[in-house]
Length: 153
Image 1 (cartoon, rainbow, N blue to C red):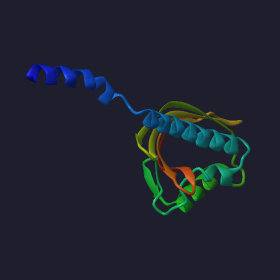
Image 2 (cartoon, one colour):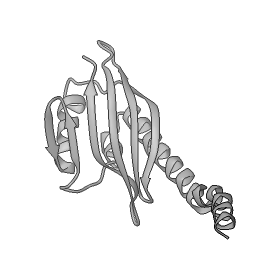
Image 3 (spheres, rainbow, N blue to C red):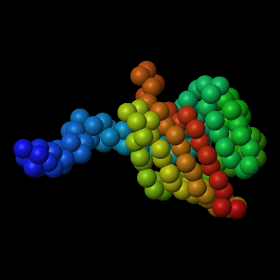
């Protein structure tokens, strides 16, 4: 009897360990949704449309942005940082490209994104790495809730 139970349990393991079709579909949808968010941000940046680029971020005081040894908290602070550094008078936004290394669903509505960014401007070409936490909101869709960006320079 014990041998029969062990055999049955071992036979069921692949079924129990395999993700459900619904979970796989949700994961595929999450990856596609986040990839679209980043593509839209890249396109907005390359049009010098900072407002639309910032639509990819959660418009909340709880948004966190880690970069250059500093921590910014809140959407408004992140917007002002981008505006001052890239969009102010005499500043050039340049052409932005992303190299997405991975998009990893962590939960049903939370995704971890790792990648590299490359900026081409007339006078320089800064680049670096980023890690994003992206959350799906019922009414907003996918939005970046945490951004940790570093520069290779």
